[in-house]
Length: 351
Image: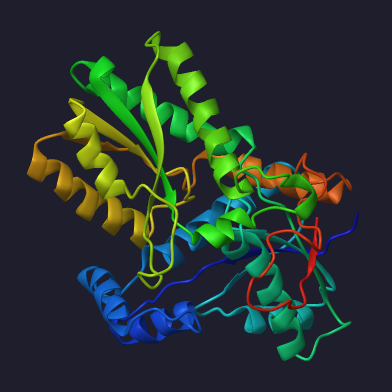
């Protein structure tokens, strides 16, 4: 299957204090998030100088992707576009078209299936094509979520093994796998219609699959078994009357202490890099809770530019170029997958 370029599609983030509130307003547009919540989250960015780490991390990732692609003989240019900040998708679409590229593989910096983590990118890219005046002039195909790739889980496995080796009494530790909370309704609608059958949403199932694979490898490597673990959630941003996935990471840290655990190991399996929601919500807020109640706290790093993770993303490209599905679940990214509860909008193709 012919592709002429790769697009790294990401969330975006402010790169200056004046950009913080406009960025948050774009992120939450039409979602009824109270102004007080936006102002509270803005303080997280302002505490970091108004600059989100995510854009710098994506620039770094692109450099490593290009190096691995060169090593493996994949001679495609790599572009970068964001949902909520410059470089915006529409501008990147025009840039790719001007460079002569007509068929593009998009890989999102989100490893799982959900509306916000997958289908919304497909909507955004379709809308950007229209806004750029390029409908029919450029085709973007989004690669499917890649949480099942071994190179995604490998850094987390190493991180938990190292964390267990550094704590006293590893048998009394609880491992907390954390990911971004989403509305319960969105979670229940996750995945294509034909895969649901009354099961929990695909978003939760995929995270649980990664957590189980990580813990299986950790127990094999450490000979500690069983190790207590739990999937928890963080960073909810919606109106308080709307149910979101729980338990929250802060409540989970408190519960671990109440259950007599000596420490928690926090594993941010929902994220590919250490951006603001990882740095602030975990390293600042969750760690602060642990310190206040006297329980040990270790946070495992995200994959970032770990060579195994970078290689796994290049594997996605290689599969797409060879005409192979980029996920073993063939119905992912079908028209019924992770539907938008507010509107049925055009989407780009899923690979």
